[in-house]
Image (cartoon, rainbow, N blue to C red; front, top):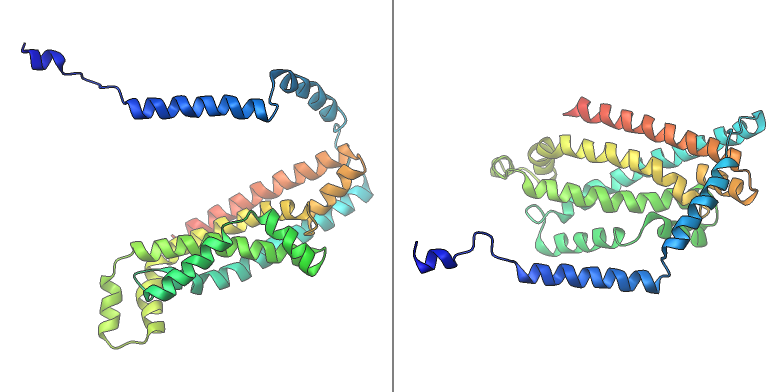
Amino acid sequence: MSATDRARVAFPPNWPARIGLAALALYAIYAAQILDITWARFVAGFGHGGQFLSRMFPPNVAADKLDLLYHGMAESLQIAVLSTAFGIALSLPLGLAAARNLAPAPVAWTARTLVALFRSFHPVIVAILFVKAVGFGALAGILALIVASMGFVSKLLAEAVEEMSMKQVEAVRATGASFLSVVVMGVLPQVMPRFIGFCAYQLDSNLRNSALVGLVGGGGIGATLFTAFQRFDYDFVLTIVLAIIAAVMAGEIVSGLMRRMFQ
């Protein structure tokens, strides 16, 4: 064996990666100290959490509580459906405009800027802004989730359009068809199965987020949950949480069926 072979290392150390990981670990320790994250607080949290959970059982299923639960869940469902419908309707032209292989560069970059803006903030933050603008209630939650839907569906639709084959699009263009005809005949048939999947996922996501926006005044079951916390009705809180879990699981089943139907 030559000196060159002996000097060769099978797995040479990656010093930049090691230095980066070491720096990340040191910063994590520093951040934990600054934020007062200690083991004592973590252990004490188990005791407090146990007391909280003990006050939640058994769940409250009184008739008056179930009536509040029904109205809250019905409003959340309405918020999710309306925000998804309007969000999808607005996401379709925005996503097509954001596709760089379909729209002119100025239009595409303007649309991408709008999509990035819609994706910059969590739905809860957007809901707070709309609560200040239009007041408490379902309208603020619907508007917040419309913005969230446009940010998600438009981005994925634009990426799907950019990944499609341009042969079918060019064939339609060669016939002298208008831009709308090119979209209908050359673009949508290729991306529609994926677009349906995006929409199904967004409906499921909006059903979950409708509870979050309700916590800040956006209506729905989140408002009922927040009121129950304020009144220390922890047994009713458990009832609401179980209902939200059941609704989300049902939404997951429905979205899965929608994806399979249109694939």
